[in-house]
Image (cartoon, rainbow, N blue to C red; front, side, top):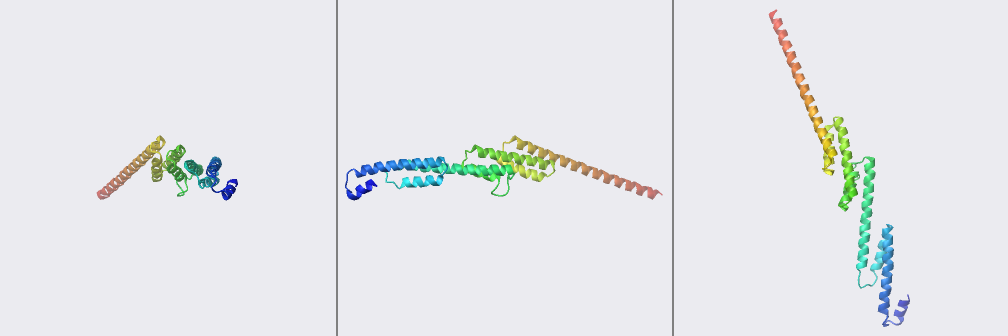
Length: 212
């Protein structure tokens, strides 16, 4: 306010540029301090307002403001990823592994991983989904629902192709298929044997009747 008063009364004052630059730097420090504090407290809207206030200052260099904007952007992204992981873990606990579409554990873990390809939590989450799918597949295998088990294992393998648990479930499924195929072969062999026996008995009965 004092500078504006001087500027209105003595616009050619030689000290005005220097004092204006000092004031702008002080304001910059204040705005950026407020912005970074707001970022730490996850008050992102307030941080954005503080950065924008700094942006309209007359400054020779806006590097520090650009750095604060980058910090805000990273913090917002990190918060979004945290929110995705929280939703993913909730769906995981509820057993919503693959359904409903766009609102399940796999969906949110994959979304978080696309946002942050280095996210260990997202990768571990997908491995947990795969593990639960493998467990479900074992149950379906035991109940004889082999096609359902295979579908689950396809999804599980896509999420965690190196899982020994999934490999064991695939082996169990193959063994169950072989067992069922063997049972069917045995049943078919018994059916044919019984049919042959009935045919032989009928032929023998016909021969006896012809002899009489």
